Amino acid sequence: MFAFKSYNIADWFSFYRILAVPLLLLFLWLGEQQWFAWFLLLSYSTDAIDGFLARKLKITSARGSQLDSFGDQLTFALGLIGLWVFTNDFIRENLFLILIAFAPYIVQMLIALKKYGKATAFHTYMAKSSAVIQAMFILWSLFFDPVNWLFIAMVIIGVLETVEEITLIFMYDVWVEDVKGIYWALKDERRVKNNNTETIEENG
Image 1 (spheres, rainbow, N blue to C red):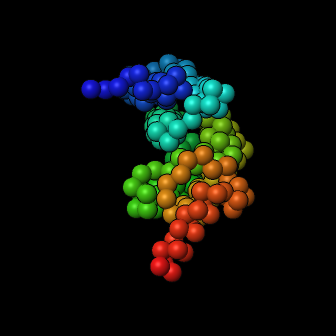
Image 2: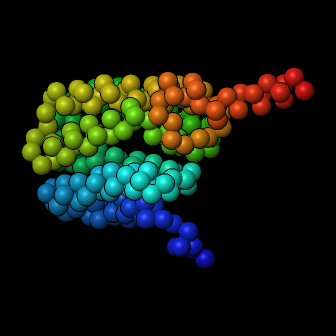
Image 3: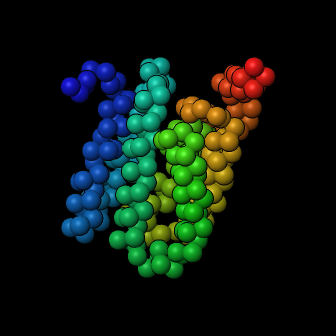
């Protein structure tokens, strides 16, 4: 039986982003750009809300982090599909740059799945910054028109964020959530404990 009571309020905001996917796909199929843009904005807003609530109410958890990351990935994917459908000319003109930005992300996902069996949920400062710029570019493009400088900024920060995520995967031998960045990972007791455990096992 599905244990509804085991999920907190932040988790339900993440659930909204997942449950909104069919509706967003419907707007895409119907060619309703404005409706798609408004509901995508709502999904992005719930991402900010659930993160704020989780920190404010101190209800963060590994499950919540995974749920949040899954909702983020679906929302981002829908945003990209929306760009392809509604701003097709711009996407075709910049397809090479988009592939350059997207290729490291695929590599990062494959490495994480091979090592952890699931996607990462580091939620670094760089990842949050990248998500904000992605949302700004996608929403601005859908409501108005694509802006080149915002697109370039999104690509650069997206690549840097992905490189940081790959680095963190190699720094942590077991899956962990909520790592602010490489600087903080170097002092993270979870990483130190993992490394110490490995050393003891090798010496034993």
